[in-house]
Image (cartoon, rainbow, N blue to C red; front, side, top):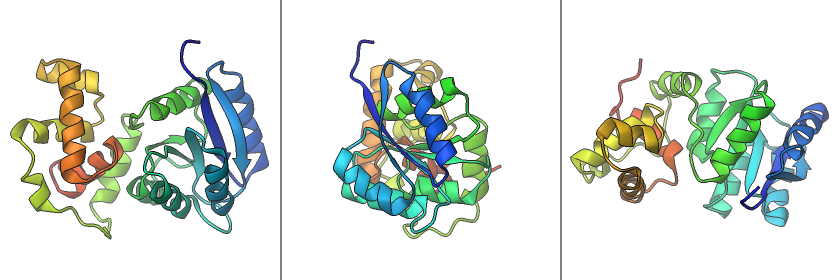
Length: 222
């Protein structure tokens, strides 16, 4: 292990789920489960007290659901990383959670390797936009989602042609390395483009950039 340990908070109203994820993640040398919460309200309190690097967040919970909890956590700390857990691969609530500020999502039946890698990806500041499932989900619900903050199309005009091209590739689920290969440029160049895109559009991460691209119709659903 060469890097710091990633501190994780698990939020789920089912004790067996919490215990299972705790066992899987604590078996990883670079990950430590620092706390658990049984609902969104408790999650908000725990995040404030424990300051975890990543929050594994269930969506359907009593008292406060995962969407509202994600929104509160991100509003209180813009650097907060929330990884949504869901049973269903096409779930409108997951789309709402992404719009609320979640950095990505995983299915609850993910393998130990997928779970750990998802935590690492999100902790490293990347969005977890798994191919197929996430693209299907964003495509499906971007067509009908009623946005409380509709895309400001004027902001799209602020992007350069290359930045717009990079944004479209982000929405298609490509990593920085894959985008660099596709455009035949250095990965560091893509990182610079991504940073500028987020600043110009007023977005917090790649996940929101992908959602923005679909809602602004830069990527055609379907």
